Amino acid sequence: MSVSRILGVMGLGLLTACGGTASRDIPTPSLAGVEVTQSGMAKQLFGNKPTPSALPSAPYGFYSKGCLAGAQQLPETGPTWQAMRLSRNRNWGHPETLDVIQRVAQAAAAHPASNGIYVGDISQPSGGPMLTGHASHQIGLDADIWLMPATLGLSRTQRENISAQSYRRNAGAYTTSDWSSFQETIVKAAATDPRVERIFIFPGAKVAMCQNATGDRSWLNKVRPYYGHHYHFHIRLSCPDNAPGCEPQDPPPAGDGCAEAQQWVRNIINPPPPDPNAPAPTPKRELTMADLPQACQAVLAR
Image (tube, rainbow, N blue to C red):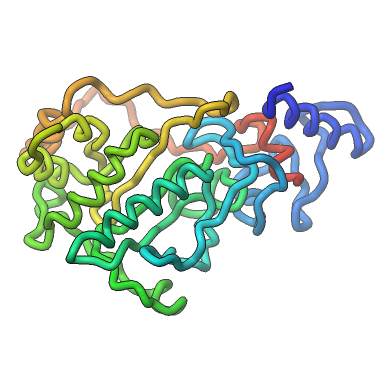
C-alpha cells in the first residue's frame, strides 16, 4: 500500500475515532486547541504546529497547495551555514532539500569572498500555508538562500535583526556594483544539482549571468526571472522519486531563457501600456483544509 493511501486511511480512521463517518464537515482531533475541520483556515493550523509529524518524509500536493510529512530540521548552525529568522520556525524541509542547501553552502565556503551562506525560509514543521509571507514553500521543496556573503558567527539576536543586502538596481533591470562571482557561484551550484528544477531571481541577475557564463550554459535554463528575489534566490526542487503524492510543476521552456530575461528588463525600463481589457485582479482566497490533499489531515494530526 502506498504512503499516500496509508495516510488517507489514517485520516479516515481519525475521523471515525471522533464518533462519526468520514465527512467534509466532521472534525478531526484538535491541534493546540484549534478544531481541525475541512473549512478551517489551513495557515492557522499549519502555522501553529510547532513540530513535524511522526511519519516518513513525503511531500503532498503542489508547492503552493500542500503539506509535508516527516519534515527534517536544518540545524540552526552548521560548518558552512546559519539559518536566519529562527523565531519563524521555518528551517524544516524534505531531506533532499536540506542536502541541496548544504551542498550550496560548501560551494559558497570554497569561494574566497565568503565562509558559507545564510539560509532563509524553507518550510514549517509540517509544511502547509504560512501565517505570513510565501504562497509556496508548502511541501518542503522550496528554500531561500541569501545572496550576500556570510561571515557566520551571528548570534540568535543578530539573525533576527540583520538586514539582507539587495543586489538590484533600477527596479531589478540591472545588478548593483556589489554583484560578483560569489553570487553567480552559489546560484550555479544550485542550478547544476540535478534535483533542482527552478531558481527564481530578479531579471537583472539572470541577464548578468547570461553575459558572464562560459562553457556549458545548460544550467541557465533553470534560472528564471521573477519579481522580487533581489535579497535572496529561491531554490525549487523537483518532486522526489517515490513521492506519488507530490504534484510536479511543468518543466521550464527549452533553451537558456536569456532572451526572456532580457525582455523582462526591457519591460522594466519601458513598461508596456496597461491592457484596457485586462480583468480586474481578484483577491486570493485563504486556503482551507478542503483545498489541501486529504493526507494533510493525517500530517496535522500526528
